[in-house]
Length: 102
Image (cartoon, rainbow, N blue to C red; front, side, top):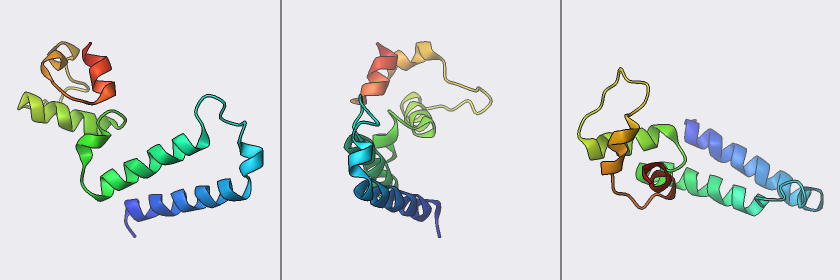
């Protein structure tokens, strides 16, 4: 079993729990609805499954670093984080990266 297979099993278990306890859970996430959370989780699993790592760059650290290194052309493996000043040269449609750049 791969890590992705395990995540899909977790997802299925949570989805079944939500289905069986929907009335009790409706108010538990007042700002972000359960459907939104589950939808984002599902999209992330699908992106991983299809190797679409750039689609995860606005929510997963290693994917953001991968996009950064791809656009900058270099990777400093010794540095704990990229220079935030150099991020301004990255152009992306990622909402999170756009927030970091601006």
